[in-house]
Length: 289
Image 1 (cartoon, rainbow, N blue to C red):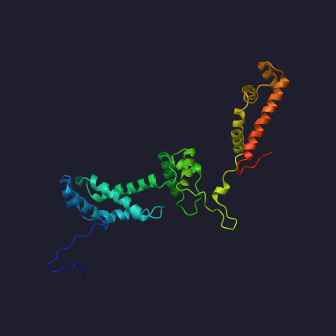
Image 2 (spheres, rainbow, N blue to C red; image 1 turned 30 degrees about the vertical axis):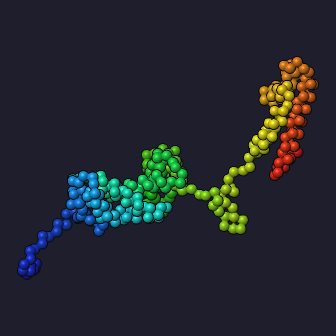
Image 3 (cartoon, rainbow, N blue to C red; image 1 turned 180 degrees about the vertical axis):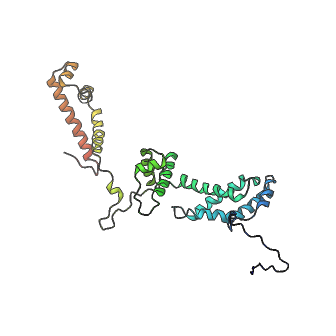
């Protein structure tokens, strides 16, 4: 019986057979340099030019990794250059806080830089500022929707399903779903129709407020009311602001109810004529009859 044996060349040693049950070594990225010696040196330096130079060398060495992390967040409404600047800030913070005795720098830097970029989106990218609690609800609802809709053909999860999956109440899920649509805003000048009769969002909102005419009338009548005799001003105040009847006003002033009626009619006509005359004299104001 022939047994095949491995051929070992002279001057070499046999390599041990790999254990298939052994865990594979952690993959190291090309942008993860070996800088433990620099970190050890940095930890032993006091503030000064030499420490700044070593720190700058570490930033330069690890900057490609920070740019790679920033690239994960592209196409989310922020320019890649700005994201790289935010990631670089996170890298500097990681270098300043890293303790070489706690393990590999990459394991510490990656979550630090990622957290800095996520914080940038959370604090700076909302067109309309919303409370932190609502932002957290938005994130929970977004993750739950993605998890419940993983299977192809799965229907859009209901509010009740999202509430059961996240442990939130249905009101909280509703607030989170509203926040999903509130990350960016739409200009009031945005065109909603592409034809010749196109209209903007502002054209669909609001209406003429009828109270504007009331405000104009009141402002127009103020000056005429000030010029009335004191007794006539008092009569108008009691009739229209205290809602007193003409008979009661007559009793208070010791005059007849007929006299009160004539004074009210005459005062109102005078104030109206003065107000309409002033408005007619202003350019761009039409007189209402």
